[in-house]
Structure formats: structure tokens, C-alpha cells
Image (cartoon, rainbow, N blue to C red; front, top):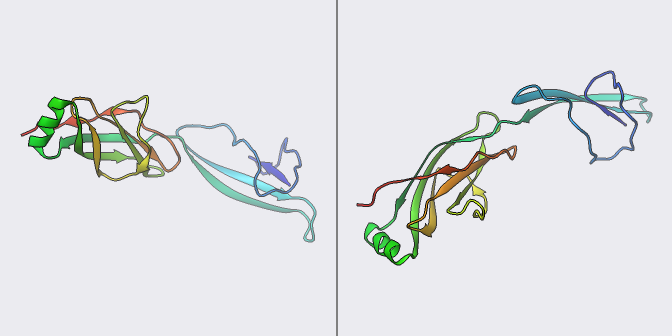
Length: 157
């Protein structure tokens, strides 16, 4: 088979037919790239057969529009913070990705050792130390990550 970024198969080297193979997409031109990919099967019962498909490459990172946190149970949260204990925050996040959509979210108080990724939800609970800052980032369906954003803490009542 031959695989190429152009229909003339310029510079394409024949390889064995394989459902998985390494191949590099042609040069990018901007944040969103739509490319036509060509595959030609050489020989076979029907002779040479050429197929093509479009690939949309999403290279744009999603963005966190807003992120706020409120400590649950304000009386217990204040007491817990004074003792340095962990307590629960209600975190609200608004995130956007215009191409592939937001898929996952990560919340942490230590950006070097973040918690695991979880399915994106605009409202979630986070258990952390009351006196430390909270950070959030999101990932789109193409695995692009937003930068960390500091969560705004609502004042306790």
C-alpha cells in the first residue's frame, strides 16, 4: 500500500498492508487543519484501488472561562481550616473548546502532583486543605490541555 498527503503519491514508499502504521501528517497551517489523506492498495483482484478521507486536526487548546469554589458547611469548614484538615469544596467551572469539545477536568492544590483526570462536569466536589489555593485545567477530545487556572474562592459566610 501507499500512503500520502497528496493524490499524486509523490515520495510515497510502498509498505505492507497493515491496519496500524506510523505516518506523519503534512505541514500544519494554523490552529485547525483539514487534510485529505490518500491510500492506494497496489495489485489485488480488482487492481490498484485508491481511497481518500479528510482528517481534521485540532491543535487548539481549550480554555477555562471561569472557576469558583465554595467551602461546604461553612462552620465546619472554618474549624477544619484552623486545624489544617481537609474539607470539601463545591467547584463550578465553565470551559470552552470550539473544535472537539471539552472532555476532561483536573482539579488540584499542587500543580506538580495533580489529581487524576475525570470526566468534565461543570459542577464537582473537591476535597482539599482549606488554606491552600485550588487550580483547575481542562482537556479537549483531541488531548489538548488548557493552562492551569487559579480558582476564585467565594468568601465563607
